Image (cartoon, rainbow over all chains, first blue to last red; front, side):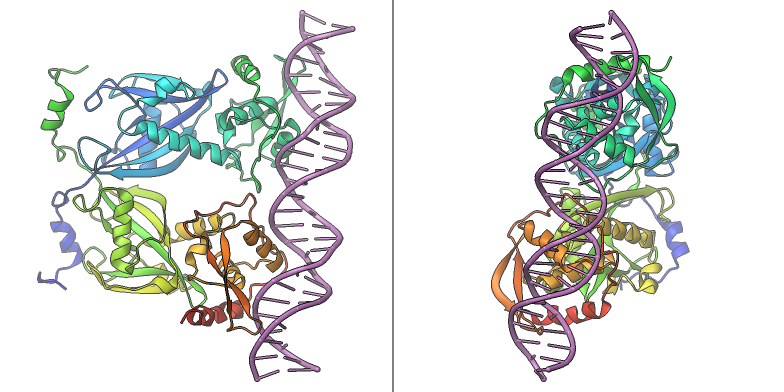
Length: 268
Length: 268
DNA sequence: AGAATAGTGTCTGTAAGACACTATGCC
DNA sequence: GGCATAGTGTCTTACAGACACTATTCT
């Protein structure tokens, strides 16, 4: 096929020089969602180094060829470094790569999205970052001017999340250990930005066998509500139809605000 | 933050040395599907070089930092080099990366899947490959022992395709320019490996406004059937419900074989 | 009592599955 | 006529939306 002398694969590998061809840089970015104060929030870090020094960006960074054995463990490492959380819901979203998304040259980033419950959080200052903060998705000023193409990644990620929530039980991963059906419904509504008929919602969730009663009640509201938990080790559930959405009912923002207190006080 | 003197971003970039940190290699792989002889086929190439020299693998290779401006154009380039086709359906599937998937070291591959119609094909011998062939997915011997982790990627890709076909119009991209509803139904059935009730199928497809009559007929079958074409520039259609599948009817493999002739003879 | 929240009864609407049926064209 | 294939009529089923209703607990 070509003019070099025939060699064995073992010899080829021994002589292989990885620096001979130019490679793009390859990094991981995580869009980490949680519910705070009844709204969907994401985690940002302030960059300690150039480029985009001191600007806010998604949680991420280079793969460490020594530390990370595969992409997912690299993502988990980034996540753990910033949130101190072990095993939330983590899904690979997409991979973006181009010549100009990073001023340092051709760059590829594998984007993950993570869902974690606010009650399991411990923020850590972490390496390579000056600071870490949660921002509401509705805060356009905070989510707008991120470094690299992160504002765009965030938008795509959120659209994907919203779409997936129409036919899955993903919001369960945003919930604390115990929650009421109304709590869960509000999280669905917050993520989707639309209200859902409570009867339909209950039918859907209770029919799927993805949560179970704890036997306890949330006594924070007027009428006490049953507390549920996610069934252990359950995979996300895929419903056969989409939520089509209430044609009438407006979103009740006040109820979502209240949810803050619900979340904070349910488990002491 | 650290001990180096404060510098501007411009200075930082000027001094930036991309070879300072070790990077994983980053490549593209494409799972290219088409319908041949009434079955789902994928394109394989025989590797010309080490590693896995002379073994079969998916279409793929390294990103060319000079030629490719982004990931998708890299995928399109690979595709065009092997099939001679311009603009089929191309979707990013997932990205796999680990320390040991390539004997040369830490390696990342971005996997795309492509759907093309058999009538638009022109196979090209192409660079870096000794040979190119279509193999049936049912041919376990051919799809089983691919180089790297390609057999596994193929399985994942096919599962994803099958799942997506349950709620989309993707099989349209496997069809020739003109086709009958029965042809289309057979392609759905071949991809899914299950039969579909013809009445439901027609309701579904005709209700979605994704195809239009050409005014012509396929005269190859006993009773002539209307020929349709995909509506121009149409995006894939997302149905609100999944195909749940016929509980009774078995898959008619004979009809699928016949489809070969249908496809070959419809347009001369 | 009255407000607020949890939770239900039951009707309608939509799209899929079942399956027997009719229609057309070749031999 | 007989077969094969295209295409339909119409009943059932599953599950979402609409919306008025009841239930519980606090003040």
